[in-house]
Image (cartoon, rainbow over all chains, first blue to last red; front, side):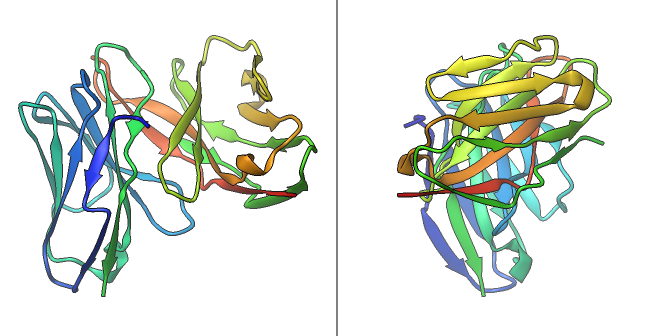
Length: 114
Length: 118
């Protein structure tokens, strides 16, 4: 157990809808990264939040957005859902002050878009 | 751009056999970190090891060992005396610094699905 939790576990949405996924960091961690893992693929970096600010972004459109709260928990929002957004969404928490400190992953949210 | 290649999509071995998972990476950074993660059917990525680009010593942890060779840009992972519980998807990953302070993003390979046959 990594201490990173995500909710919900599973989610089914319709194309065009909006979705919010949530992540609680491991205690003491101040950084959250989000990854998208399509079936049969490795995780792809979406973005990272450090002290409530976006700290880097992967090759994802603006309809993917996020928030980090003062308690370092985080949300991933996806607008105008497309079928290709169906994937496992993983969040990972880490501590910025230890460079390349291992990122601890949550169990993920499996999103299905129909 | 950074890239991680895991050429072995699926491997099956009989229990107690040794198995090696290959990982080849590309980066222009002089300082980087390499990782291995295990993903069991539950989906959660489990951290196995982190290796600094300046440390080419091989590492052994129980039945697991890692061979890092900078000259061939490879970071291979060997499981000795495999067990059924080792069945999972294994990912190799490469870090890339996002800012001068602290944090990194990970670039993952496509994973190797390892099945241990009882």
